[in-house]
Length: 283
Image (cartoon, rainbow, N blue to C red; front, side, top):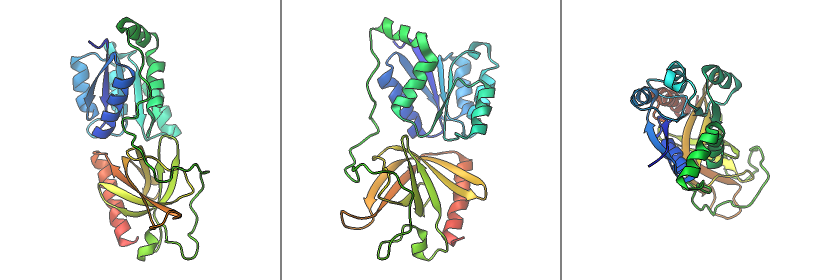
């Protein structure tokens, strides 16, 4: 029987599964329960006392920050570690989380190692004692969401996208007659891919990027930053669904990357819908 209990809170089932799998593989003494939003988490926390909360920020019904603020007002949760796992990594949001009583802050997308280190940091001696009593050791790297990707495995220095040379395929929506390209920044655990949007729906986006950048593997976590309005950026969580050469030759300069979205937040879907309408109209 697990010695410790953790609650994983995120509106995206893909992210919840990834967090639970990492915890299960790295820390077999921690039993995980999950909730799709802060309201559901609040209900579970009222019935069961958890030893660790791993929570997203942006969720429908009750945000991670609201859950954190409520939690710190409960006597049984005043000192329970709360790790905020979110794509909102700007300074203002970090400061707001610290003021709310967050224990640690982990940006999306994250690596299994990054998540494990945060858990070790906040659980400290209690986690070590539980592992010692169980006679189990911490697991090795969790590559459950990593499959072999043979495309573009060559190490290259990251570079910003440039205009295609004469005769090269255009790398963005301008190819279809749109007056301007929609630039997207796709963040992974260890790199950021500069690209342009080729096509987008409510479930996925296909971007084109120059080959001379660091590319992810299939099923890697991703956060797509898209400017949906002036001074408003949507941070859409997803995973790499497909990598494909733009041209049917090995020395192609451009690569198509398809990201499947996993967010279920109505606000994010509304922002995405507005962007899609603008994208389709060429505005």
